[in-house]
Structure formats: structure tokens, C-alpha cells
Amino acid sequence: MKIGCHLSSSGGYLAMGQTAVSIGANVFQFFTRNPRGGAAKAIDPQDVAAFMAYAREHSIGPILAHAPYTLNAAAAERRIRDFAEEVFTDDLRRLELTPGALYNFHPGSHVGQGAEKGIELISDLLLKVFDEAKPEATTVLLETMAGKGSEVGRSFGELRAIIDRTGLPLGVCLDTCHVWDGGYDIVNDLDGVVAEFDRVIGLDRLKAIHINDSMNANAAHKDRHQKIGQGKIGLDAFARIVNHPALRDLPFYLETPCDLQGYKEEIALLKGLVK
Ligand code: FE
Ligand code: FE
Ligand code: ZN
Image (cartoon, rainbow, N blue to C red; front, side, top):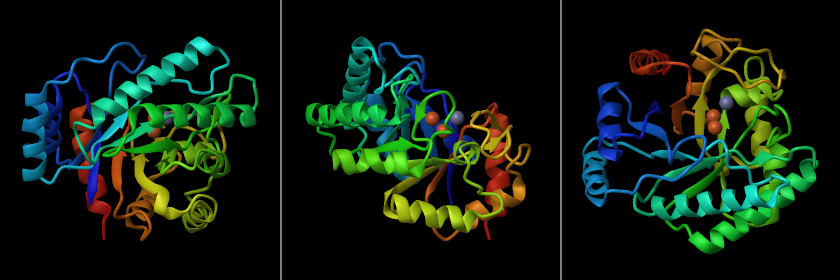
């Protein structure tokens, strides 16, 4: 099983790899920079080289880089879209140093312009960014969103529209809390949701799972993560999720409200559910 959690990137790549191993993880997620935006720390080539060797030795990966939350490709203001383009391009260039990584971003919030306009803006920005950064060793993932506020990506169809409009080799990261909050009933009809994903997007695009319980009811459109088994999704559903034939070989990344010890326990808990 490929399982890990979100880690602080402040100590660099090797430190994240070592932390992952210390809590029983073989994958991890991290922010490319302060989640609220801002400049990224310079990458230390020695740290990257040491990490790559360590990752090979300990079979770590794929690592998942998460774009800052402030990146909004669908913003109405030009200045905010320019910032998104700059950050996105810079992140993709840096990620070429760690080949095989995934880069996940929240498609954006259309801030009242409508989902269709949002999809158009996001697609335009993706095309520009791919043209500028030419990512070869990184797979860019659209995250499924809960649909709070004016979030784009609240349905599989909205993600499909971005994929179609760009024609880019984009993947998808499915967040269990978000799809549940977004109205997909992964508790009572996991097979149906997986089949719907396959029909609308195609399972070949599914590259990662954010494994989170939810504080809220199905279709609440809230996005409040809860610890595994302590929310409205519940442990039985997670047992089905980690064993589902279409999901079980994907990397799972926890983003629950846990400290390292809590993550270590959740990783053990989820591993224990695998048949
Ligand atoms: Fe996210
Ligand atoms: Fe997520
Ligand atoms: Zn979330």
C-alpha cells in the first residue's frame, strides 16, 4: 500500500523522506511554498540528490507537491491570475529536479463569474503555464473540490471540461472529503461513484487519493476534514476505499487534522484495513 500524509517542507526534501519513514509512510505531500503564497525557498541541489538516493533506498514515492491555496487561476482580477501563473510556472520548473513527482492544485474559484467562465480561465492559464514551464517529469493533477463558495471542480464534469478544453495530459487527485461534501455518496455507493468517475473522466486519469474523513454530511459543500473514522464517512467506508480494485494501487495522502503521532496511528490504522 502506498500511504502517507502531508508533511512540513521547512527542513527540505531529505528531512521529509526521513520523517515519512519514521511514521510508516512511503509517500508524502508537501506545500511547494507557504500555503498562503509568497516566495519559495531556493532548492538545495545536495538536499535533492540526498533525498533521491534515500527515496530509492526506501521505495518512497510518488511525492505530491501541493500548490498554495491562494493560487486562483479563475480569479476575476488580472493581477491574481498573473500571480497564479507565476507561482505555477515556478513550481513546475522546480519540480523537474525531482522527476516523477505529482503536482496538485485547486482548479480555482470563479468568484461569481460562473463555472463556465472559470473553466475557460483555468484552461487558458494551464496552457500558458505548460507552454512556459514545459513539464516533462511531473504530472499535474486537478483536485476534486467540495464546491464551497464558487469553487470550480465541484463535479467530475467540471474537471472533464478543463481536460477537454486544454487537451493537456492532466491527471486528477480525488479527495474523499471533498467528493463526499460535493455530493458523491462514497459511503453507500462507492462502486457507483467510481463508475461515474470512469465514465466522465476515465480512471486512467486518476493518479492520487487525498484520504480524509469529513465533519459534514454528504453534499454539504463545506470542506472540513476530520480524522479517519471520526467523521461522517466512517471507518467501514475507508475499508472499502483502500481495498477497491480501482483505488488500492494508488498513492493515498492523509490531510486530516493530526500531528505526526496522529498520522502515524492513522497510517497504521489504514494499513490494517487492507485485505
Ligand atoms: Fe487540496
Ligand atoms: Fe485535498
Ligand atoms: Zn479540503
